Length: 179
Image 1: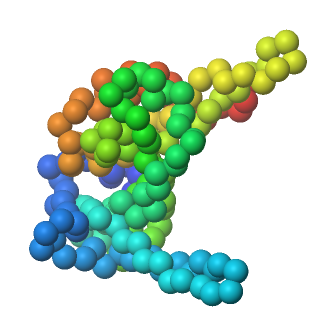
Image 2 (image 1 turned 90 degrees about the horizontal axis):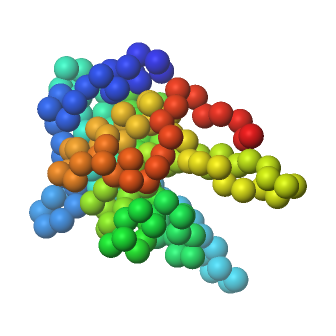
């Protein structure tokens, strides 16, 4: 997995072929998920699909798809959204890494401003103060930051590093244990 991570981390969006799979006449991504949900006396079949595919041009065995699992989390708005005064919601979605068509890695991302800003899904780090647990900071790894940066710049012009700084995410090599 480290080779795949290194390729992704060292690449730029110019190294990838972006296929948008939503909107008029875009066509399917062929990266679908089906889920059965049950209610009291019946069940429903739900379909979800990745809305974007990236194919690494130097080796088409490597691809990334994202957009499935996008879920508006009402009532679960993290406090880092306060750094974006015009943003009133956060979407969470999966980005899947495929090798030779097989899923080999999956990462959660955050979409702010109706999907115009992608950030890595941060890990909250807590500390104990006078016997109470308080949020100390949000951490993201360098790898997850590079991964989110790649997907962000494929679609968006907003400055990724500015958004990461505004969110006050601490970029670390490894997520630390709670303090």
